[in-house]
Length: 359
Image (tube, rainbow, N blue to C red):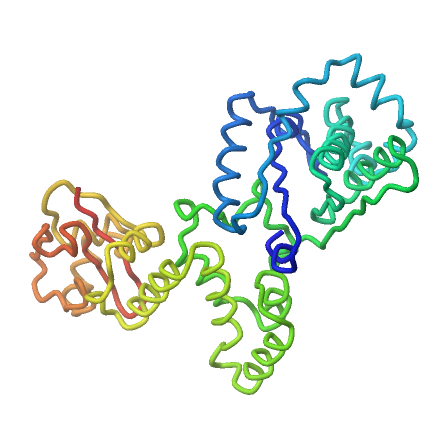
């Protein structure tokens, strides 16, 4: 949507308050049904997230506002009558579910999405519906409905893109494991930055082309430069920076870079409070209301498996507190040690970090 906006098109963000009550058929099993309150709350949160990604000229619509006005008889006579069972069974998303079974509810999903396209075509002059390749059957059903209502001279078209896949071949779906969330409270900008910084050389070209708005010639120049010095991960750094900046803004990118630099160098004096909040979403941690011994903190944060091992690490000068070597095995941690009165960084060895948070 944002790319199309950049080329002068008007984006209409269609949010599924109604379709969220039904559930798009997925390959594995029937989706858990949401209550109306849950679906509308989800829709509102999705709109909030999209508003941070699109320009101010975008329109936001919730299909519950028109689907709720269609009674069963109208649905069956005005829309169901226009599609044969054979047509619907031929759709890939339905065909894949026939062996394990599909309810009439999910079977009907494509008709509701088709009604969405017709409604937006009629009321918002929407000519193009775009979605992932798994939505192609629903998009073409919408085109078919528009054709049957307005004739072959209609101006509607459909567009889809391949789903973005993780390295193991699974999709970045919200219902899949290991999802990367747009919500910074669920996946911090630092975690997003690190994920794409660690992208493989085989994936980075595709990610730059699909997840950034960089011009093609600039992407090719970045890839060429990166190819000459792959150990510097130039392409990955540019990718990670572009994605974080697009998702969360330049300040979040600056904070993510500060956290990355702090963990690499082992110094935290330059971090702002937002940086420590990012660390809190990433590192193992304990919360304290009062002082705690370093030994107990090491065990609680899993930097040591036992108090005996914690003492061994301390005696070997392998533990640092805010970057400084802990000299005494009896050392305690309190708020006087904490950045911003809350955050204390524990480090064991070169790369094992944890966080003690007061309050």
